[in-house]
Picture (cartoon, one colour):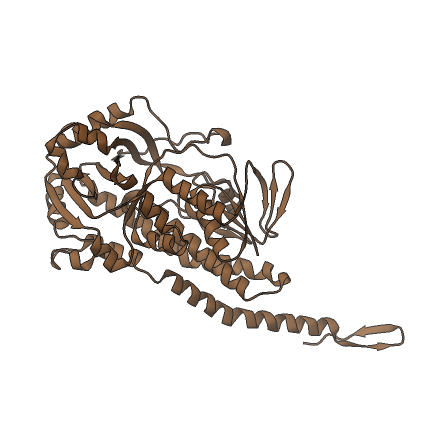
Length: 472
């Protein structure tokens, strides 16, 4: 079975590696690359579990950083609201660690794995047309590539999404802007500021909770580098810009005075945070995007994957984890179908059903993750002082697992929301749903083909003539 994947960035490479490990024939088409910031990525245990299954976890752990604590702090004086154990409790409850890594390091790991697996990546392959029914892709240079399945993993500004829906469907700017800066551990140490020691003494994520914004500080590269990301929410979203031409598409807009903007946003905040900003290097200013729930992710033998199909807000770090799960489910379904060796002429009928089954399995999870992300933002950015006091009391008893919750009288925000997503069982459910589909569908297909053969062959001959007798 040949799988054509459109997009050679993170989403496309994850899908390619997952499909190759299922012994599928994979071709990745690299189009014009978008200019993206080297952002910090958090990978929760559900994502780490898929990394392990794909043979990537060791490399990510080696280049990244495992989170041991999550500290929630007041924005003004930095007072600790709650320090949640995030290391061993997470590993015991969900089987895998919570990891941080830079996007550049993660992309390098994916490319190295793709080379090890000898995945065919065709560079500068600009897609001109996709024939959904036949799974044929036509390139700008006139080349025609025939596959069995086409996967659109071409990101937020996906062209494949327009093909699936038969009309343009660009993302809309959200009301959030993310500002990012970086600072090295050596630069922090050189400040010789004892007040900063508490922030850097352990491998942890520190989050300052403010009004209409919150700021996250976390280590990457085995603690040698720190990422500082501020999510600022405007009262109204900015007007949508005109669609940029393909060669100039950027998901990140760099600003010369970005660090000054970050410093201005944090006036009156924790003095330690202001000290870090005074010595940090500005990286990017990125407008967050939103995408209305699509009516479908599939069109015949074409399917969307990752951010081409949905955009999950970053506030529970589930975007990349969801893409890993999407790829794992899709590759498992395709691998199971290939294992049962259907006749080649049956694939055009079976593959749309398999892709629809993938959508049935994954679309509700994407909707739920999106809603949970927006809820987390509202909790992290409470503006009313009374509401902040209540929120702080509430978070003072929250934990990542049921064992780390301080008390059952307080609503367990983190564990109650995260447990269904961080727990295992995804691929077991996928195999069970495939088996139920197989037992119901394949015998029906065989019966349909048997009746069709009977109708086409029943008859009798007289001399040189043949009279056909249709049977029902």
